[in-house]
Amino acid sequence: MVLHQRGKRLAKCPLAGHSEFVPGRPELSEAWNISAKWLRYFGLHGRREAVISAAVDGPCKVAELADSRESCMVVGTDHGRIVRLRQHLAGEPELVPASVLWNVLGKEVEKQSKWPAIWATSALHSLHGVCLALRDEHRNLYAFDMVTRRMLGRWRLPHHPGRTWNALAGGATHVFITSQDEVGSAPQLWRFSLPNVVAHLFQTRGQARPRGLEARA
Image (cartoon, rainbow, N blue to C red):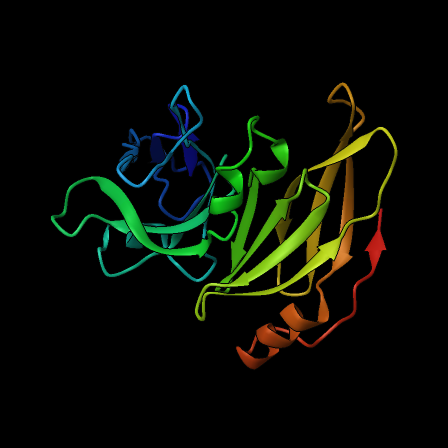
């Protein structure tokens, strides 16, 4: 899945080796517009909220994005909101909001004269109904249960002077987070055991056994 046109469109692009890829056959990408009607304006100059990150929930199949009954897609905005999207009920190639996972900062943001990076949700990962997000200038890892729409917790990431956490992915037992230096080079990949509350949720859903929070480079 590719988020492009400055967060206005989402495209499915099959790759070689994927179960949907057939050698010798031209692959037609599927694409959806992301509705802009729910995006807010901020500030005196009317700066519009933008979608800056996207993730597909683990158990969902990409084909289910075209089903108006499913809400497999999760997006983050530069206003700090995290929203689940679904296909438009009319069957149009458009994704519209299904529910909001994170919206509590909205009133506080409107009071700010300048837009701080601390609100942005620019790194998302979704798996087994749990959404993981890097927030607070990428200093903290948040976990949301997309089934109950509640926050499971927040965990402070290790501080390394001159480095920034910038992307994440994960599985049933660990989450992997990358970091880079101030000029965007010297990348590192770190492995963290899933926080206990997240691992316990996976256990109840038949995914994994509980673990503590550990980190390894």
